[in-house]
Length: 247
Ligand SMILES: *Cc1c(COP(=O)(O)O)cnc(C)c1O
Image (cartoon, rainbow, N blue to C red; front, side):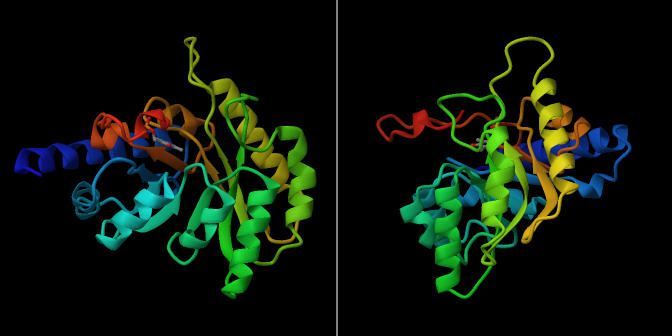
């Protein structure tokens, strides 16, 4: 990494941090309430470390294999590590003990698998439930109408603590961005907060990416997941299959 690349990365990170603070203040909220989780996929350990040295406090990774490789290289040292990508049940065991929060828990089966693995290790894993708020067939996540019964079922597992909700709304087409979906998420979050389930506390609402994190903050997001605005456009190495990841 050149010095120029390093200072560009620093500037971008500080710009994103300022925009988050401004959006929070504009919404009458304390900027400290909003956590920036950098989506670090496809950025190597050196770049991730450079961001952490520039003040980044939390990283979100998408793929288990990539996370393990970068973890070994010390990429995340000095920051909190979370998982934000599609997760297969058979890979859960590699994440436990390494990530503080699994944001992208998209089915009962996956949540139960996390509970089972956590039990083996005598630990409790913090998770968010991913909501398929746009009802998109190609996306995973809980449908709104199944959330209550799912929370009920999952409250029986003391090895998982549901700390909130996460969403990746459809790619915006019109001019009003994702406000409709953000508003729906906000309402769900408030409704669930008012109910009492064991092992559930609605602490985090994770939504908003490079294109719309300020909008998400206006609608109550307190975790935003930002990649491109910090690291620049992701490279897509030919033949790795990584080009099919969320862009
Ligand atoms: C890549 C990714 C992001 C960040 O996307 P950008 O548009 O680059 O900010 C956020 N959330 C998830 C789940 C991602 O995979």
